[in-house]
Amino acid sequence: MTRPVWQAAYDASTAAIATLSANGFGLYKKWDYTMWTTEGSAGGSTPRNSEAVWVTEYNTSNVDNDLNNESYDAGCRPKYLSTSGGSNTPAWELAAAFPMKDGKDTLHSGYAYSLQTFYKNRDPRFYETIAYNGCNWGLNGNSTYRLWTYFYPNTKSSPTKTASTETSASSSGFYLRKGVDPTLTLASMQNAGTDWIEMRYAEVLLNQAEAAAEIGNLGQTQEAYQNLIAIRKRAGIDAGTDGLYGLTAGMTHDQMISAIMFERRIELAFEGKRYWDLRRRKLLESTLNGTMRNKMVVTLNDNKSYTDYILTTRDNKREYEPGQSVHDEFYRVDTDGGYV
Image 1: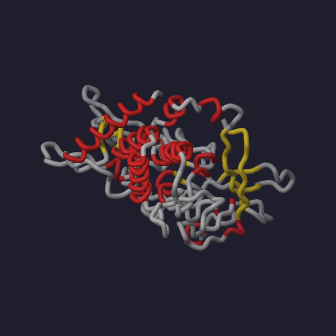
Image 2: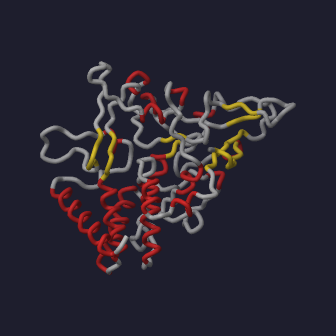
Image 3: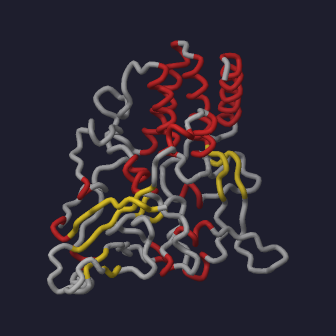
């Protein structure tokens, strides 16, 4: 795009932010599933859900004439918990892309990282987007439910033959947790009425940040920083001693654009934006050519009994929450190419 086009985009985004702010819109109070389940109230002077700019509305009716349910919620759950589940499965590449809790990548973070404990001390949005082996995911009204996706060798003669602890296991080792309402029961999820946000206030901020970065004036560059910081602060990333929430000070034009595109990938994951972002920036070929999606395989170690030997004790003994101790000796974690 030429500079005048970016200026027009910046002006439009700035006007949109002013209009939205004047009418009670802004970043939602926290980054979790309630951003999708909190709906506006008719006739209210301010929106109950400040994040929701454009929304596709759904209902819970089961009458043909006015039935308009959404299938997203049921489709994201494990198949053994939902007849239509398992259709949205994040690949390892997305899970790995999330920064650490200080907003830095795994190579530059102040938090220790290893593949074995890839889920520890990550950007809080990771835990609200990616459902992984051993995580607490209170589905179907069960607040203490744990998700298990590991495999175990089940024959001595052929140790490579494995069985899964889960029926119809995820093809990638992960499930999509984003926007899934854990309070829905097995019966109610089939007629879910959760509205889908087509455009969030966070995206408007990112739109403005991108246009501002392309204009490149000092004031607009600072505005781009401010928008990224606001989004990362709301997410719960550490501020850091410099107050930049993991961002690099003094970024060049190219660095800032890369930072904004990265933030869009994390903040807006599975919201239907990624393809269009890559296309708009002419990054489709350089980003996707020659790549494949990978899955994560978690396997029980030291399985001399060739059984699922932690089946009856795993929920009480396994501590997989952020920052907690983990009994890693039971697991071998691998990434496995070829997932399509």
